[in-house]
Image (cartoon, rainbow, N blue to C red; front, side, top):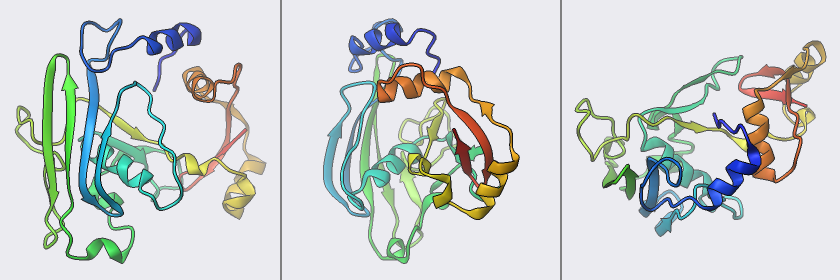
Length: 223
């Protein structure tokens, strides 16, 4: 969760952050993903993408690979947290490749997915290659967890990633009758102020107030 005590000050600091190197926590990040190079993953072919700012916005049409790119980044981390869609209440749990693949039968074809990730911890620059075996559908390298905590070419540890699906932001009537019934019975509950400040920063809109009103199978009613 973002801890934004002073949104204006935080905006100014982000504008002057240097993500490429680490000097101290006042002008750069201890942990930073610098670049990803994808040979092939789903619809993505031969993509090289650098991250030059603390906040990156991905835009594009449907089925172009935005979610796929986010999944590559998320599944390269051991602590990949996402809402548990199998539970009626909204809770975060650790996810793995098995939870996000396959989406369709297309993922079971004999294709070897490969990508390379570049990241930094302090002044230590690191990189790792991930490959998916088409026969076993298992991942190696930075796409796989390792019991050896000192191993570099393995899923990144000590850094939690939270995957929040913003496509759920839409009229409640477009979701389900069950959610609509729960919204009608529930009391509005104000979310943490840090969440409101984060949305205020993302949308560049002051005085954002957000309340949750009931939830059903990973979907929240929001006011």
